[in-house]
Amino acid sequence: MIDRLLNIDRRIIFVFVFIGVAVPLLLDFNLPVKITPSSQAMYDRIEQVAAEGEGIVLLSFSYGPSTVPEIQPMVLSILRHCFSHDLKVVAICLWPDAVGLAQQALETVSAEYGKEYGADYAFMGYKPGGAIVIVNMGQDLHSAYPQDNWGKASSELEVTSNIHSLRDFDFVIDFAAGNSVDHWWVPYGQEKYKFPLGAGCTAVVAPDLKPYQNSGQLVGMLGGLAGAAEYEKLVGQPGSATAAMTSQSSTHLILIAFIVLGNAMYFISRRSARSQ
Amino acid sequence: MLFLRRTLPMILAFVTGIIGISIYYVPHSSAQGLEEVLARWLRIVYAFAFFLGLFSLLNLHWRRVRARQAGWGYSLIVYLSFGLMIFFVLYNDGTGPFSPQARAGGYQWLFLNVQVPCGATMFSILAFFISSAAYRTFRARTPEAAILLVAAVIVMLGRVPVGAYIHDFFPAAAQWLMDVPNMAAKRGILLGVSLGIVATSLRIIFGIERSYLGGGEE
Image (cartoon, rainbow over all chains, first blue to last red; front, side, top):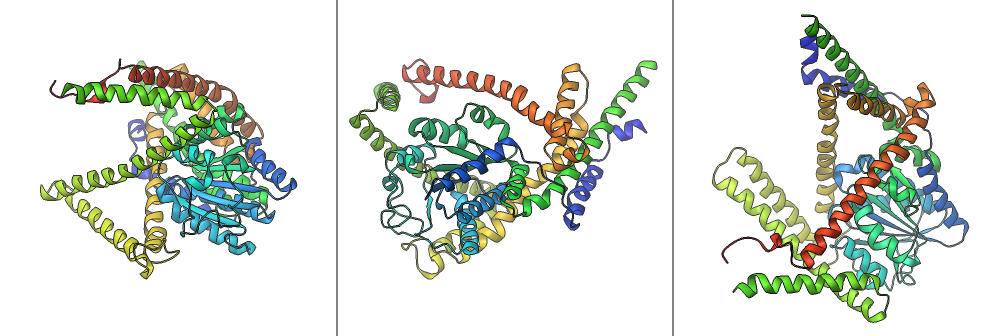
C-alpha cells in the first residue's frame, strides 16, 4: 500500500491538478488579494508621475506567447492606469514575438479610453540587439527608432517628437519573461542614464530581481500572476489574473497536500524498513 | 594563416574589448559618439544572427526529414508553419513586403490564434510536471531539505490569496523569506557570477582565454 502511494501514477496527480485549475475557473468566486509593497511601489510611482503633470511612460515588451497568461494582465492594468491619468505611453519590443502582444494590448486599452495613436501613445515595434538597443535609446531615441511600427517617422509623432533620450521618460517599465531587466535594463539603461525603472515579470524571474529593488535600481516590481492580480486590484479593474488566483490557490493547496502525503509515506516506509 | 586564424582575432578582441570598457566610463562627446557607432554596428550584427538561426533551424529539420529520423513528421510541420507565416508576412494583408507592417491580416490572426495559445499551453503543462516531480522528489531526507521544504510551503501559501485567508502569518512570512534569505542568497550568487564574468572577460581581452577561437589545425 505504502509502496503504491510512494510510486503513485503521475496521471492521478495530473487529474488532481487539472481539477484544481479548472473547477475554480468555472465558479464565480474570487479570494481577497493582498497588496505587496513592491506592487504598491509601482502604483505609487505612476500616481506620482500623474500628479507631477504631463508625464510620459515607456513600456518595454520583453516576453512572448508562453508567458501571456502571467504578463499580459499586468500590461493591461498598467496601461489602464496610465491612460486613466492621461499619461502618454511609448511602447517598444525587445523580443521579436512580443510585437503582436504589445499591439493587441495597446489597441484594446486605447479604445477603452478613447486615446489617439500618435498623440497619446506610440508603438515603435521591435529592434534586435537587446542591451544595445537600450544604449542606443539612451544616446538618441530617434536614432534607435527612426520610425514607429507602421513606418511613420518618430520625429513626426506628437508623443515622441520631444523625447530625445531615455532620461526624458518619467517612468520606464520592462515586462520580462527572461533576464532583460537585470542583464539589459539595469546595467545599460538605469545605471547609465539614471531614470526610474520598474519591472513586471514572471514568478520565476521575481526572486532574481529582489536585490535590484532593494538597492533602489528598481522602483517596484510586479511578480507573476499574483503581482498582476495585485495591480488589477490597485486600479480597481479585476481581470483574468484576479480570476486565476483562486485556481492558483487551489492548485498550490493540492500540491502541498501531495508533498505532505509523499513525505508521510516516505517516513512510514523508512520506519518500517528499520524495524525489519 | 596563423595570423588570420589566431593573431588577428586576438588583436580585434583586445582593441574592441578595451574600447568597449573605456567608453562606458568616459563621458566625453567623442567617446559617446564612438559608442553610438559601435552600438549601431552591434545591432546590425544581431540582425544577421537571425539569418544564421533561421538557416540552422531549417537545415536541422531538413536533415531529419531526409534521413526519415523518428518524429520527422514534426520537422515537416516546422517547414509548413514557417512557409505559412512567411507567406502572410510577405503578403502583408495585400500591401506587399515593402510596405510597413499591416495592423491586421493573416499573420496577426495566426499569431494571436495559433502561436499564443500554443505557447501558453506548452508553458502551462509545466504545472503538471512540477506537481508530479515535487511529489516524488520533495522529501525531508536531511535537515537542509526539511528547511527548504518548509520554506517552499510557506512561500507557496503566502504568494496566493488562500494563504492570507488561512492566516496573516503566511503572506508576512513569505515576504520575509523573499526579502531576507532569498535576497541574501541571490545577491551572493550575483556578485560571484559578476566577478566571474569580469575575470573571464579580462582573460579573453588579454588573450589568456582562447577557446572562443575554436580548435582546428595550427
